[in-house]
Length: 267
Ligand SMILES: [Fe+2]
Ligand SMILES: [Fe+2]
Image 1 (tube, rainbow, N blue to C red):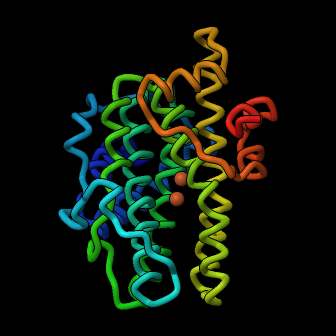
Image 2: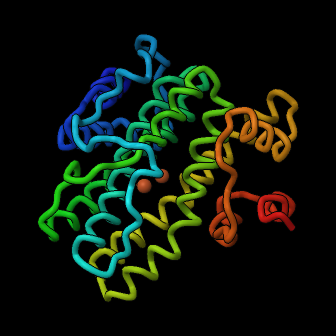
């Protein structure tokens, strides 16, 4: 097997988008080996501070409240929406690479799962970037929001919090956001974007499911109740709670049970 951890490190540090996606693609042979059950020893050095992860100089990042709300009715609005999705996907690549490397002590199955997510996020980024190019825009042309990576920083010492607040909270909020985005692009008959979004929707349910699986495993290993621990981490890290309407079908497919969905919906 090629040196998985050395390649993971290269992908983690890569800053230009093309370089990042290429380095992630180079993890695919290692990922296939892991999927076939070849689990090497955990190796490699300690992960640097989250601030050092590779990301491009553009877009400039601003607080979410200073970004204008855009509807996909004209070319600019459509590009703004696609740019926001591209930003989420790029951050999602970094979040998955960081989880795989930073928390490798959890074992090679954990590393395998998050490398697999990074590979899919890179594909999502490229799908959305291609749609931006069709509209004569590029990732980095517009400002983007700061929130996503901050949470990685805050949970760098705590894998339980990372699994709860990144895949099981932020990515699950992405599932809630997908139906209105689908409707917006359906309303303007943008079939190529709808095709890209359908790939993303399919994969994102699995990403949340992996977050749910690992969060549950970690809770079980410490004898912690799943739903109460999740609620107290949301409060403890001062992260906005999921706001109904939730995409209950997708969340349920990703592992949220009825009692927890009722609680999150305030029923
Ligand atoms: Fe994604
Ligand atoms: Fe994802």
